[in-house]
Length: 145
Image (cartoon, rainbow, N blue to C red; front, side, top):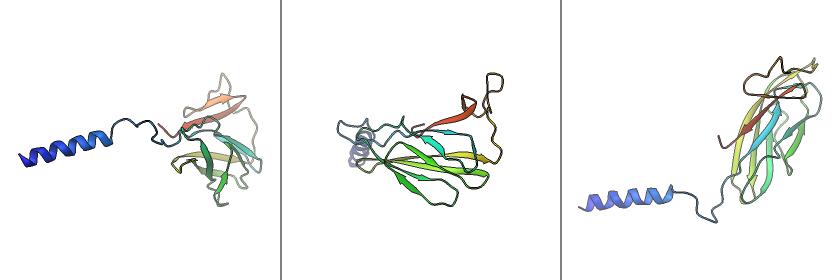
């Protein structure tokens, strides 16, 4: 009998702790990032996280470009980075909300010496779920998926 009561109390406690968020509970940011699949060498590249949202507001982004230049923080939702060598880089971005919760995602960006857009058109669509925007393939990612 005691064992059944303990099991029932444990299941109830688990159900309560895993239930929907209560009003006032802080939720991690929903990080959304738009970035090119292919980018030119030694040219400032804009990455767009303006679709990111959070119930407490975004405090800052931490960006790890993956090129050895080191991580940096930005207070806005747009950031620019210039890659110095051709390669495929694994960019990591973490969004922090005003109370310190975070969400992260990573993205590959291929940097090339010879960059002659368009890389995509109606006749030549982008691959890997990317969207064509004015001849350039962009990937839009979401940390909540």
